[in-house]
Length: 48
Image (cartoon, rainbow, N blue to C red; front, side, top):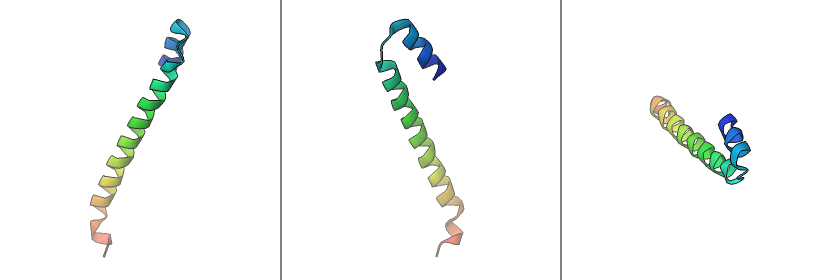
């Protein structure tokens, strides 16, 4: 967000924040899916 704020202050283009939010959501969803896959793989033996 610091880099986004700096880029916005130079260009005053609100689209910077939109792209930062999209990138953030993509990273969070990717990490969430990886974590769910790891958890499912590690807890296979606990499920019947």
